[in-house]
Image (tube, rainbow, N blue to C red):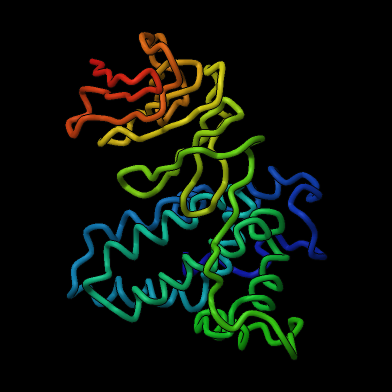
Length: 289
């Protein structure tokens, strides 16, 4: 990637939204070889087994971060794969955090830049440069480094961000009050339940909705939880039922669990994930296989 990624890889004459690029698929075929596309989407997996003494790999990674990170984000934007940026950077950070504190810190800053500018990165492959370099926090060393490489961007004389914002993103989509939320065991997804009768899944690194709302309950969803292995979701509702969902597919698994005579107020999995427990306003607790 260090030899092939570059600024404005499509050779666009002006900065425009991705949706306005003519013949985008053909331009991708002409400008981004399949081998480079694959590298952009899977490079972090290589570092899962990297050795502390592999100085060449460490140097290549640092060169990538300091010279080509924005080029890589541009390529992901073109490939409609911006959602891969955060997970790949975090995968690499986990793999080398005990090997190089400097690289780990740089990867962490890259993650935070992606989280902060996820939407503009995905919308404009060339516009992302001015957005990131103009509005990144002053304490971001990585952004300050790239500002020297692209000195002609707009500069903010007063105001702007000094520190990283505490609120990374706002997850919007539910139509009524959100009643219950939870993280997947690996921390990559968020599940939420709402009085709009739906369950939603979110990407924890970007705040983007994953798929369509999980629909089936006939009243407000009062409680949600991931299974210990992260493959299933259980939900309880004001329709007196408990439902089980596939976390990857979003599909309802089996029929609703019926038996409660009033609102289901709380649900949970057993530690081994083989049983479900539910509590209800009918003053009972039920155990389900």
